[in-house]
Image (cartoon, rainbow, N blue to C red; front, side, top):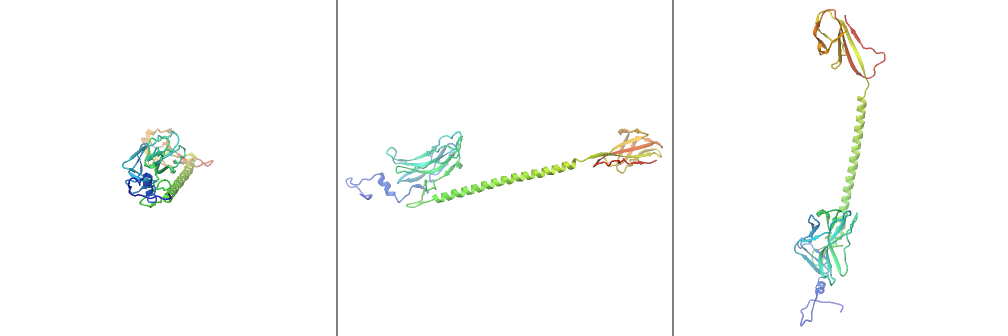
Length: 313
């Protein structure tokens, strides 16, 4: 017979139908995929350990259905010690005599430095709907939702069923979304690299500028200095306890030595305030006084130059 019909009431058992006949009834009416508005749509969530939960939902595969009424927990194998891998969370339809069921399953990927997800099977007897892909890093003991890629929208390996006959073909949308995501990611990565390069260049430029400034400052501070002395000689004309230094070049901080009759005074024998010398003990008329001011000067001393001497009598 080149056609089939159904369903009609049986009379004395002349009409019998099996599961395949019921499945044929849905062909062309409901496409394979996850029902978007049933339950929580079979979304895969991380449990923050080495397991995932498939939320309540319903899916059709080859006219058969699976309905998940509460979170279905699947445990993933432990991570590799050195390589990464990608596991697939699938709804596996198996029409073989030994199985005849749809089972939520973890499809383990091959460990690799840059792993690829496992292939999704689609034959006359076995068909898988891939709900999500889970990236397992080497040595991982747990993972979060950030490691899960939701693939329900990809009609090449899963897809959503939104109603009778029509299934939303989101494969192109998924590819476009993935392209835009990768494009944005690459742009952000390029911006980050450019920023890091500019930051490195700026640091180098600032360091070079500082080094040049510091070298210049060091050169300026590393100047030649020389010592020059100025003398004021005079003879007292009356008894006195004080007298002026008498050296115009004197500045606070210069070294001052005082001699009376060629005898050097100790620092406790006088005080020096604003260019005036006050003696602890006074001196009488006719005493020879010599005040010597020693200065440190910046530059080069001219050959043959002599210290200036002011002599008063």
